[in-house]
Length: 160
Image 1 (tube, rainbow, N blue to C red):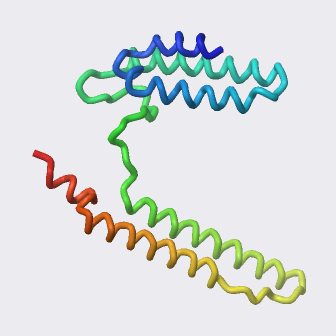
Image 2 (cartoon, helix red, strand yellow; image 1 turned 45 degrees about the horizontal axis):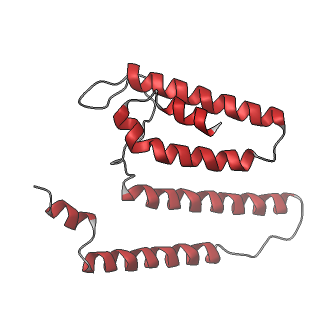
């Protein structure tokens, strides 16, 4: 199936194929390795899904590409090297995770109170301590990168 996958990759534009082809082939080979011990039916669905994905992705890349800006009318995320999440996203995700953890803990307390059981006495201290350790480690790593002049700010200084 790997030779067929590589031949279907030729349907993509050359620039896209050169940039993402080896990675796509590697990911497919790993997924195929994981599917090796599955039933014939599951493997068949896997191969059909992968082949269909390659053909539809190639069609989208040819039909929907507007030269110059990479915009596609299909509104689907296409891979780009320069795409990065803002740093604030990581912080907001951690805040949301903490809120969900606290909501679950509160719901367990309410359920225990409703059932007449003794309320749990654990606190969120381990979670808060974990977040503090992670943020301190991230700040230390950023400090090291800043001292080595390898942060994004320093890279922007090199842009002409």
